[in-house]
Image (cartoon, rainbow, N blue to C red; front, side, top):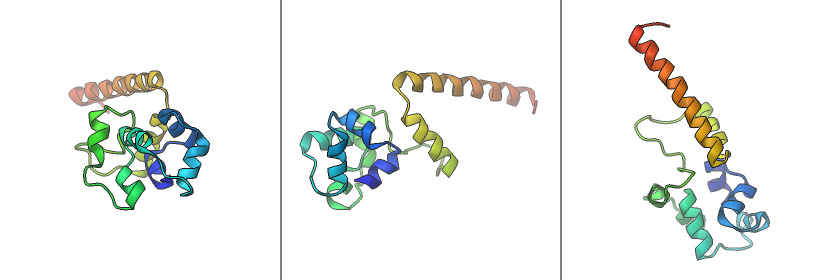
Length: 127
């Protein structure tokens, strides 16, 4: 369980808030003293956690399907068309995921503005 949470770069507290349970309950799941019920597992899946892996230790072949269908705020590290992420990129994504939805929107606007300056440089040939 802790491995899945770490893979998404989400704290126990944030995961608990997203699933409407206590941080203490997350700790119990991670120590294997409690097993999450159906509603909690569904919330985990919507966030991009591999619930099959949490319950069985075997990775799911369709890990991203539920998260994509629910437009989850955490996309489980999936990137399309960019290849593997560097450690620096993983850290950036983990920090992005800790932002509120409003902060994420602002961050996206900043990235869009930066990308538009790169597009202009590419067209003019400036360095």
